[in-house]
Length: 155
Image (cartoon, rainbow, N blue to C red; front, top):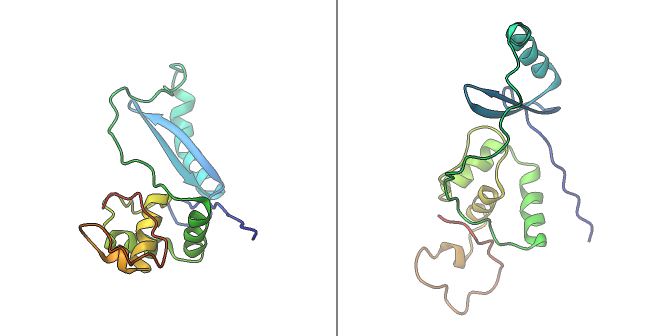
């Protein structure tokens, strides 16, 4: 079985297809934004008057802060499960996927940008409930082994 995974960048400003990611720093913070060619042109046109009159202060810091917030471990699923989830989500509206993730209990769903694999898993499980995913506490019954459950989420 052949699987093709297509990664698309979505413009963080207007939701159109993005051409690339722009990294920039301001006031000691680093930022990234995915933009279409038209919005990237607007971005640089707006910044150019200030860039032309500013002095260089070296390159932006690329190291991460030493005090990091501990995040949940990455989901533990195999490639076939991941491919199935991504295929399911490919034709869907991203806002619909986000809403399914929220309804499924995900707490870190952003309104814009990429939908994380962890949130895709929550959305998929919410859209495809099984007896095992419906159990909120305690171990799953021993006779429930009919479908694989995509786990690794903290809900």
